[in-house]
Image (tube, rainbow, N blue to C red; front, side, top):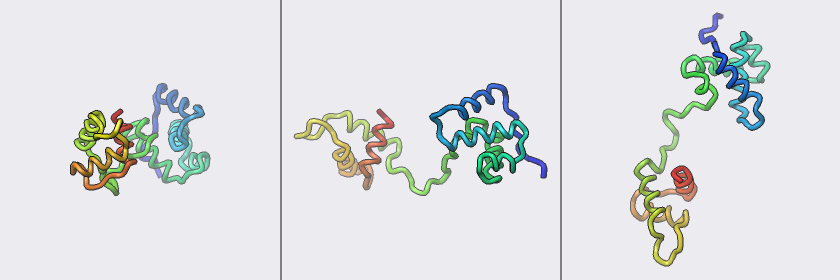
Length: 144
């Protein structure tokens, strides 16, 4: 069967992928996908690549397809979910409200806002129906 998606890397792309494969601190998934693209560019067959990286042939095909359709860097990372199983608790407006609340004066009798106090205040103000401390922490960390 003839390949539909043929990987042709430029010199710069090859250098980038070589750098990713040779680095010590890089995610295993990213390293494997970079290696798949390098081997595909060298003309290896899908089954040879799958044996080399110890993955399924279909995985090799998908990485090549993603590279051809979306680009080399997009092929290295996980695909974002189009329809996540759980919607986000805090949207942009709620995160802005949280940031404003955290930057404002703390409640009376407190020196600073705590994550728990912020979560409780968001529920009290009706911004969200319920929210965990972890969600509040992640939103604050992202906006810091």
